[in-house]
Length: 162
Image (cartoon, rainbow, N blue to C red; front, side, top):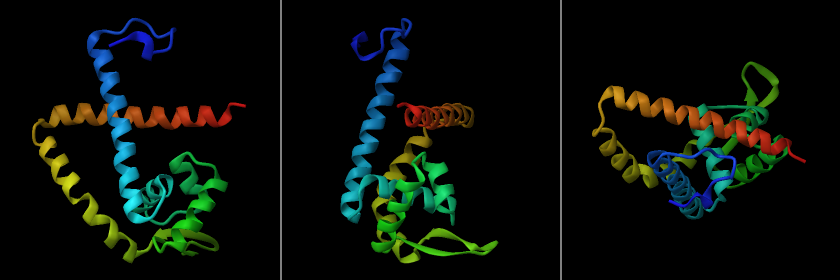
């Protein structure tokens, strides 16, 4: 693999590190394309689809909480929520703990359109999981968690650039 793909201040990488970086980039690109295709089938853009995914996993949240989860600005999240609500994928509701606040939650009928699109990929993922023992899975899980934390940190750095 060529070093042309890395910034000049990156130290020499082993062939395994280079291969891992390459596969991470491939995985990222393919995940973006996969979710773009899903988004198109749902009549959403990719950002709205992924915000809906965060909502499906987190449960009811405020717009500010969704902004924190996604790394998007609160203004961008408000627009996302407006579009998702108009498309019937989310509903706004009073916060049961503070009636002055509004929370956003997935609309039950919206998930019926999404779940079938992920059945095959879930089965394929479970098949891959079966190839690893518990210790290997824990190592992979730790690596992915660190990558996710790093990505959110890098997104925050980019937001603060002028």
